[in-house]
Every structure is written in structure tokens, then in C-alpha cells.
Amino acid sequence: MRDRAIALALGACALAGCASTADYEPPRLSLPGEWAADGAGRAATEIPYRWWTLFRDATLDRLVDEALAHNTDLALAAARVDEARALLDIGEAELWPAVDATAQRSRGRLSERTDTPLPPGTPLTSTNNRAVLNVSYEVDLFGRLRSATAAARAQLLASRAAQETVRIGIAADVARGYYGLIALDSQVAATRRSLELRARDLELQRIRYKAGLIGDFQLRQREAEVAAARAQLPALERDRAAQELALAVLLGRAPRALREDGVARAAENEAMPPDVVPEGLPSELLLRRPDLVQAEQQLVAANAQLAAARAAFFPRIPLTGFIGGESASLSDLFTGPARIWEVGAAVVQPIFQGGRLSGERDAASARERQALAQYRRAVQSAFVEVRQAVITQDRAREIYEAEGERMTALADTLRLARIRYDNGLASQLEVLDAERSLLQAELNRIAALRDRRSAVVDLIRALGGGWPGIAAPPPATSAASPE
Image (cartoon, rainbow, N blue to C red; front, side, top):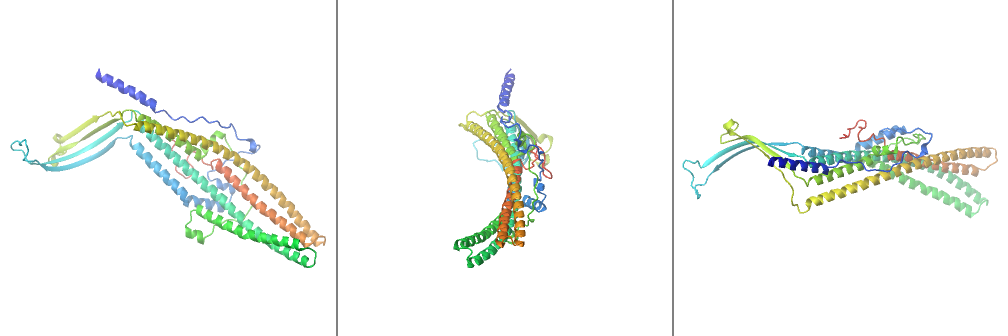
């Protein structure tokens, strides 16, 4: 009857323990049913894992590969993944029995000066040899260890997602820096040509000034324009050097290499990937953006840690035992008469901990609420980023196309001005003005091309950079287990 009562009590505790380890339930989110119709009439873009290849630039491909191989931030993220994997191994080890072996040899002597005299013939010295195999195991009846392991597993998945976030960010920063550097190269070259034209124009204006055709005001105005153009050149060269150094740091190059070697880049060209149109449902963004997966896995970990903190209120049931031999002689240690063994079980029920368990539970509950708030904020920010990136891409394309039309018109203007000059119908100043206007339009076009490329990069980044998700292994990398 007594044994039956104990069994019923343990069963009731088990049911209570199961109730204390609730499974994770994804939070309810209000998400749009479809993407805004900015890309109406255009096919959705399938973004590859190596998304920068969409730009069809072999130099960019090499630079991104170099950055991913040597960037210190990515190395740090990889080390954090290794740490999380090791912590998961530690947690999973708690679910298995622990087995260790103990070998002991001792020799001692009894005292002859005690209140109780030794029986006659008792040897004063003795030798004892002991060799046992110890086994211990905790019955995880209430899910404390399983919850802790689930938290470690979620932290591993979160660290892998964080590694992907760093990877996508590095690739995006390299692409932006690379095309920014190319744009600065073109701007420096165009500014030098503009400075040459302004210097020629100034010489003509000085001739006209000496001839009395213009006054001091007009001459000083042209001199100021030349000085302003001359000041732009060192500023652009400074920006180019800073951009090159920043890009070299992203590539993970050593300080000496930064000083001695430049960053190779291709000549400016008009190559552009097609505009990116979001594919799939907006809800799929939760699975494609690694930062959102990281935030949710941190919420999963916090939920599991709360379950473990609740389970700590219930009894722990450790099982222990050993088997081996004990003998005064080594030759008899493993014989039948020397064999020893012991098996035991215990129930350890916390009664008074000074509020420690309640504090740990409340702290875990607060961390779960923090993780939930951070996840909701991350989701909200992600959809804002995507929407803003789509708008920026569309406006950047319109600006780029408008600047192209302007350049075409100004090129025609320059062609007509030269025809008029050849026929004696226009002065050389009109030709120089047309050339100067065309160069300024070229500078605007260079900036518009840079901004358009950056907008495409930002949208790809906002959409998750082609990451296949936590359950799908990326090409040529280790897969993240969905378990």
C-alpha cells in the first residue's frame, strides 16, 4: 500500500512536471498578405546564394570571395558558432549516464594506544586495493535537462543565423565599397577633364577682358569657378583613398598590404543587374532573413530556459551505482570473493532556497519577454527595410534614366555647338560651355549609377541575401540542423 502511494505521488509529480515544460509556440504577427505592387508586370527575382554574381563582374566576385575568406568579423562569428556547438554538446551529455573508473591502493597502520585494545593477533598494518566502475544518471522526469538542451540547440541555430547575417553584410559592404570606389575613379577623371576645360575657358576670358569685352566681375567669376573645380579634385582623391582603405579592411588585408597594395577594380561600365522584385509571400521573409531567424531562435532559447527554471522546482531523481573489486592482494582483486557493487536512487526535492529558484524563474520569464519584444521589433524593422529598399531602388532607376536622357541631350547640344563653331556661327566659348555642361551631367550620371547599384545591393540585403533558410544547407557550407 505504501509503495502504491509513492508511485501515485510520483505520477502526480510527473504530470505536474509535464505541464511545466510547455512547447514553444511562434508569436502571432500581423503580416501583409502580399508585397506592394511596385514590381507589377515584372517577374519576381530569384536571388542566388552568391547574389553578387548578378552584377556579372569578375573583379567583384574575387573581392567578395577574398573578404569572406579573411574578414575578421566573419571569423569571430564562426568562432561563436563553434562555441555554441560545444555548449550544445555539453548539454546533450547531461542526458546520458556518466561512467568513470576509479582505481585505488592504500596501506595503513593501526594505533596500539587506544582505549579499546586490539584483539590478539590483529595485524597492525594492512593493504587495501580497490577498483570500481562508477555509473550515475539523472532521470529527467520533469524536463529540466531536456529544456536546457533545447535552449542550447536554439542558441546554436541563432549563432549560425548570426554568422549568415555577418556574411551577407560583408558581401553587401564590399559591393557598395567597390562600386563607390569605381565611381570615385570616374569622378576624379571627369573632374580633371572639367578642370582642363575651365582653365581653357579662363584663358579665353582673360583675352576678352584685355580686349575690353568683359568686366572685372565676369573675369573674377570665372576665376572662382576654376578655383572651386581645383579644390574639388584633392577632396575627391582624399575620399577615394579613404574608400580604398575601408574596402581593404573589409577584405581582411594586413596593415602592410593596406599601405603597399591598392584594391584592384575594373573600369567603369554601365553593367547593371535587373531590378530586384521580391518573390514569394511576405511571411517567407521570416525564414529567409537570418537576423529574423536569429531573433526567433533566441526567443525559442528563452522559452526553453524558462521551462528549465520552472522544472527546477520539482524533484531531481539521481541514480548511482558502482561495480568492481576490493582486496588486500592485487592478485585477488578481480576474483569472485573480492567483488563489490552498489545500486542506489534518491529523490531530491528543493524545500528552502532563500528565493533563489523563484528569482531564477522570474529572471527567465523576463528574458523571454525581452526576446519576444526584440523579435517583434526585428520583424517590424525588416518589413520597413524591404519597403524602403524597394522604393529607393525604383527612384534610383528613374533618376539614372533621367540623367541618361540629360546626357544624350547635352551630347547633341555639344555636337551642334561644334558644327556651329566650324561654320563660324558660334564662338569657342559656346563649345566650351557645352563641353562643361556635358561633363557635369557625366558626374551626375556617375553618381546616379553608383546610387542605383547601391539600391539593388540594399534590397538584396533586406530580402535575406539569397540565404536558403535555417533548414536548407547553403551551397558548399555545413548545414544547420533543424532539430
